[in-house]
Length: 383
Image (tube, rainbow, N blue to C red; front, side, top):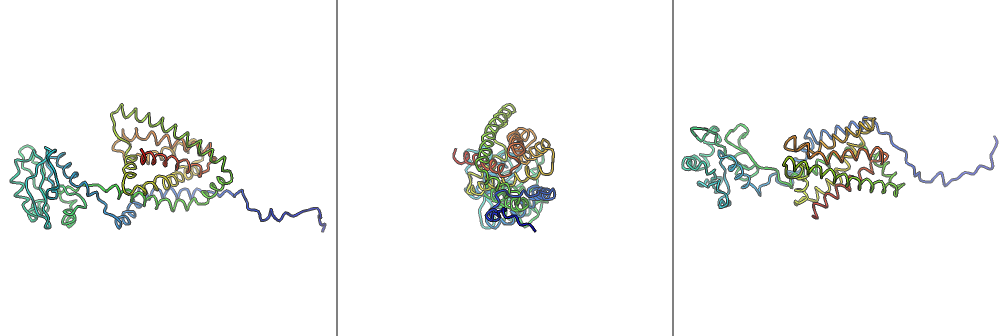
């Protein structure tokens, strides 16, 4: 065998770290699994159910600081409703629509009986039927069809209870109130509780979705590390463009809201603002700035673009799904159509940038999305 004495072996090259990582192969199966997980966690309610199981160990779900407000609003809006408030806790000097007609003792605690002023003629009759706890149960729980006996309306009398309140916990939970026509359960989850739920749901979604795409994420961040200057330039350019497009989209949204006389922000945005101004703002900050960009980019860009091979169709599908996900809680179709504009603009831009400018590097998209959400959060916190 001929020995080539001129051949030199570079041992340093053998042990040198490979700066060009091997691109992993993303299978359609993994993308489909990630979308299924996202759908199950966010839309089928499994994430919320599990989050509630955990959250209930840390705090009460209900906003009991506003229980009097819930009660009075119900009676003001519907004169057929009746309510109980803790004795001397309600000031009616500025509310001419309501009147206190007497007291009732429930579980050794005194409550004032509040009715609409339009039903004042039933003062004595109603108080006699609500003179004590036993009458309340017999007349309104066991007999669930007690009516005002108006000649014109003969409407059903409903007693409003705030979910989670002492009076609710005392005896309403002992009955199946869904079958009791005369009971009206009102009240909302507190902002802090909703924020905790939202945080936990995103944790449940982020962990498995990140595990599915971990190889792709690591690979893209290695590319980022290998060419930091170029990647940072791509991120900054994308972030600036997103701000400009966002301003335009918000101006168009504001114009349409003015034309159609719609007030307030999108429901999703109002929830974020309320959460960032609550005691659990750190949870919303982590959710909106870290978890949301990771999950949404992996699903709406990485997964969908890997399944839909035509770039333009990928952009259309991903942007529509991305924007719809943010307006599902809008009160009606008109609000949804108008408030979807900023989200649709963001979705189209991110899809375009991912395909044509970022070379499908998910690290770039997560970074842009992160900066955008961080800026929005800082505006709420500081302004």
